[in-house]
Length: 323
View 1 (spheres, rainbow, N blue to C red):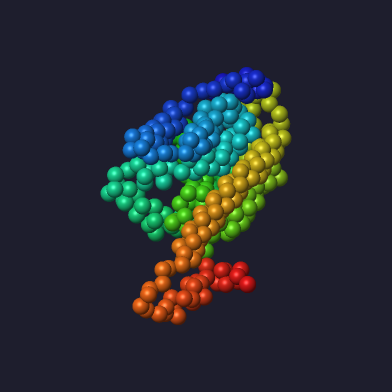
View 2: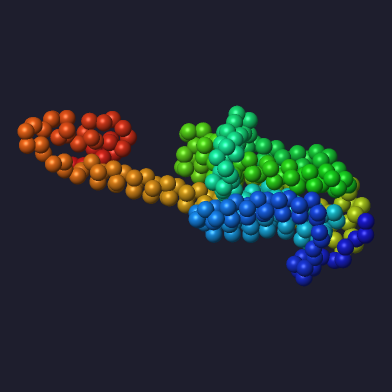
């Protein structure tokens, strides 16, 4: 394998190489998403442009950058491009795909029987187990640690098909946590409300920094034999290269936690607003005075408002707010 030219800012922005398996995945995901959007439009239904932009630009765009940009050109001779690649596939690409809400789009666009099968598959026991917040967080952490602290990563540098499988492994592991938290509430346990999800995202941001910290401070070189043999003359010291990679992993992990948390907070605000509107409508309906019957006396049960007799959470809130 010939050594690529010295990595400069210009080459970092302009160096690209094709990756056929990655292109096929991007084309497949993009084609299915476009089919769903077009199918809804033919039925006169609207799909938010912001979700389309998030899926295409942040989701598929990150896949392209991670697998075909200068990161892919230089990942076999420098550690830090490979580390950035992996964190993009593990954190940012799943976030973009989840913000596009492809599962809800699929359920809306598919015919009734197919949509029902998809719902059943997404609410099955296996999916519920894998997407359980604590389980999915542990899987993401275990994936990162397995990649760097077993022969997995160094073997993937030598074997092309395993390198492609590692890309897919990282993408799927990251999606197990991000997609349910942002889009598939029915796969989450009942206690996983929006405040709990916000806390889980905050905790996940801390946990995601652990692999970067370990990589940056680890005394043993990761894939050291490979990088010592393939490091070009212009590259930095191999240990310094690994420290750069660990620092990049920490920085990206902490940066991506902020938009993830903001997305949860926006969802929380929308849910609260929808519940408030529904409550206002119910109150307006209940408070409309009924026309008194001329021949019948009003029943005491009909005179008393519903919030004075019910023990629901909404009724208790109203009783507390009224003088």
